[in-house]
Amino acid sequence: MSKQELHDEVMKALSTVMEPELHRDLVTLNMVRDLTIDDDGVAHLRVMLTTPACPLKDVMARDIRAALARVNGITGVDIAWDSSVPTDGRIFGQIQTPIRSVIAVSSGKGGVGKTTVAVNLAVALAQTGARVGLMDADILGPNVPKMVGLGYAQPPISPNRKLVPFEVFGLKVMSMGFLADPNTPMIWRGPMLHGAIRQFFTDVEWGELDYMVVDLPPGTGDAQLSLAQSVPLTGAIIVTQPQSVAIDDARRGLAMFEKLNVPILGVIENMSGELFGEGGGETLATERGVPFLGRVPLAAEVRIGGDTGHPIVADDPDSPAGQAFRKLAEAVAARVSVTLLGQQNVVPLNVIK
Ligand SMILES: Nc1ncnc2c1ncn2[C@@H]1O[C@H](COP(=O)(O)OP(=O)(O)OP(=O)(O)O)[C@@H](O)[C@H]1O
Ligand SMILES: [Mg+2]
Image (cartoon, rainbow, N blue to C red; front, side, top):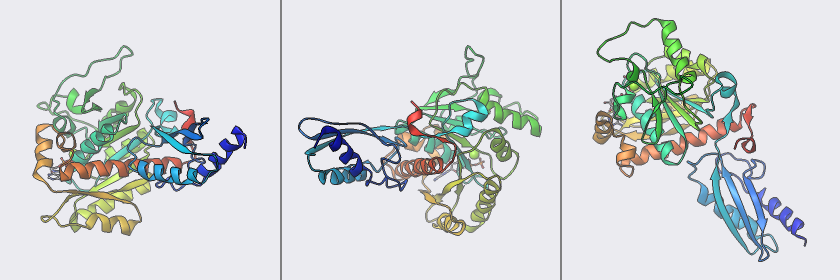
C-alpha cells in the first residue's frame, strides 16, 4: 500500500469515530489535523476540540486507537490535543468585536445565585485555558466586583479610547460597579440602561474571547431585552433554586428567552440540598425540553467565597461546590459547541486561527 493509500485508510477509519457530545464524526467536524504516518507505521495526528473544557478526551482517544488498530500497516497512534471554540459569526457581524460566543446567565427570581453562578462558571471556563470575559449587565445593582474582590476603581483607557477590563482569576471583567460610586446612586432611564449594556460590548477592549459570560439582574425586563438587542446571544442559562416558587419564576425567565429566539443552553439548579430540596431544576428542564446542566449544593463556603471576593472554584476547586462548578463549565461549553455547530452562520473551525 502506498503512503497516500494508507493515509486515506486512516482518514476513513477516523470518519467512524464520533465526537461523543456533538454526535458527528471527527472528519466531518474537521477535527483531525496534521495527520502523518512515519516509516514505522505510527500515525501522528492533532485533534482540534471545540472547547478546551472538553472532558471526553479519554473516550475519544480510546475510540481513535480502536479504529486505527483495525487499519493494516498502522502500528501505533500518537495524539496531540488542541482546541478552538467555534465562532458565532453573527456577533462579529453586529459589534465588530472578536467574541466567539455570548452566554447570558439569567433567572426569573432575584437572589437565586445568578451572579455566584456567572462568576464561578467564568472562572472555571478560564481554568481550562479558555479566554473568558465576565460582563456585569446588572447596571443598577452590580455585584460582580465584590464577588471577584474588586471595588470602585476607574478602569484604564486604551490608546483607541476604550475601557480596559480588569483581569482577575484569569478573566476580563467589566462592571458599572467600577465606574460609578456606589454611594452616589444615579438616576437611570430605560434608554441609558440600554446604552450602557451596548457600550459594554462596543467600548470595552475585550480582545479575543472564547466565551463572554453575562450576569443579568433578576426578572424579565429591560436589561434582558437590551442585552438581546445589543448582541446576538449564543444562548441563555436559567438559574433556579429547587423549590417550586422559584421554579415558576424560572419558567417565566425561560419563556422570555424563547420569545426572543435565544437558544436555551440549559437549566442550573443552585442551592440544592436539605433546606430548599432538590430536583426542581431538573423537573423544569424536562418539562420544557431543555438540557439540565447540573446542580450546585447550598454550601456556606460558596457564600463566603462570594462575600470575600474569592470564588469557591478558584479557592477550593476540589470542594463539592468547586467540583460542581467545574462540571457545569464542561456542560455549558459542550452546549455552546452543539448550539454553534448547529447554526447556519457558524464560522468553520479551520477558518479561525
Ligand atoms: N450554592 C450556594 N450556597 C450558599 N450560598 C449561595 C449559593 N449560591 C449563592 N449563594 C449566596 O446567595 C446570595 C445571593 O446570591 P447571588 O448574589 O449570586 O444571587 P443573584 O441571583 O445574583 O441575586 P440578584 O437577583 O440580587 O442579582 C449571596 O450571598 C451568595 O453568596
Ligand atoms: Mg446578581
